[in-house]
Image 1 (cartoon, helix red, strand yellow):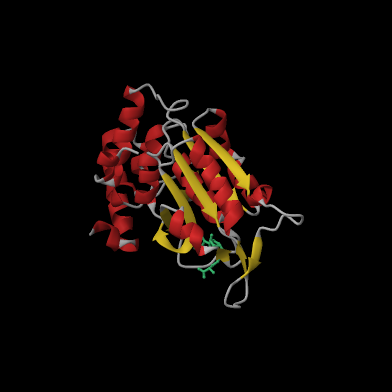
Image 2 (image 1 turned 30 degrees about the vertical axis):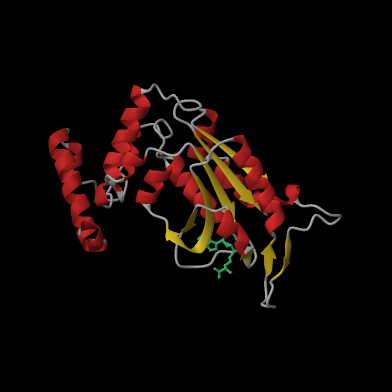
Length: 257
Ligand code: SAH
């Protein structure tokens, strides 16, 4: 972690990050890579989000190393049990403390983790600023709950941060872990072809993105704004900024406060 960078706003964090990665010739594992260990009871749920498109290409380029750990591999006993009834009798099975303890302590022996994160509906709500901070980390653990959740002792003794992806309840933390991983990965310099593109996305610099278009310039009489075809880059970027502010004012005025 680079804590001094975390106090500044989103966009500076990113610019700083890019600058540091360039100046240090990306001394992390390979080109500023991040290691993300995801702990799950149903790793199959993570297969497609982590093995295609930008995340897959980032893995191939060595920018991110993602290791998924199956909780069942750490279960003991004849039946490899990973969940049990909820003390107190409420409905829903609870993931047991021991297998998760074993994975986390094993990983912690191997390297130092910046954060050990539990995905939980009652955690801090995930947003771009949180993603920016996490993208500066070197090693992260994302622990996914399932069924009713996990034994609270894990949260009390091993977790350093709890994140929710919104005020609704998923069946498991895997979709949340995939969303967070994807958001972090696209911020790593080199993960998307035009590095600056992630910086012009919505929520960076507290603005939503303005309208975007591609060819053809006219489709069924629907025209792309003339300014974008003018070739005047200064005017185009002024127009884009104006549009971003206009859309933000209309759709998310809270971001401008
Ligand atoms: N009984 C829990 C919900 C369990 S849902 C409660 O009432 O809070 C099962 C698992 O899905 C959770 O342990 C968590 O890891 C994951 N999960 C569900 N909703 C989530 C959300 N909004 N954000 C992040 N993780 C979530």
